[in-house]
Length: 115
Length: 114
Image (cartoon, chains in turn yellow, blue):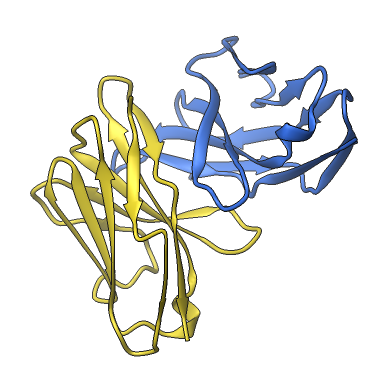
């Protein structure tokens, strides 16, 4: 139980295009999901907290208009990287919080490469 | 604010060696503490956790004890295997304004050789 999936697992896009990444909790409902970014050989940096039915809460320094987050249902949150540039290339990981355990379960990550 | 400091890697050990990865934290209140493992190309998996002082988390031969007096949560395993090669992240969860958030350490890469 408590499985989180991400799609796609990897994506390559041209500079200036937008990319959408999906995060799904497969066997539980999650009112709260989190989006992280991980640079090579570094830790996870929290980008934003996604709350179902309301606006996401972004961490300081994260551009809201560049990283659009939508949490339209209790099992799906999406992250859209708009007008992507090479510096946006990174590993993006989502997690979903299972309230009864107050624990986050992580997706496998999405590798984004912007050419 | 909350922060987690863990020893830098990479740590290279021979199979069956004893492992210790140090982790210390700074936090207000009473955070929960976690160790996550990340295998190459994969997301994070929870390895173990402890929610209050003196709790010991354990899983797959790994152990860590929540030491409030030293603000530490060191990861140990008595005999490592090649399959334990991965990156290990120490993390804490505490209420920080916006709700329960995880704060991660920088990760420690473990390489186990035959």
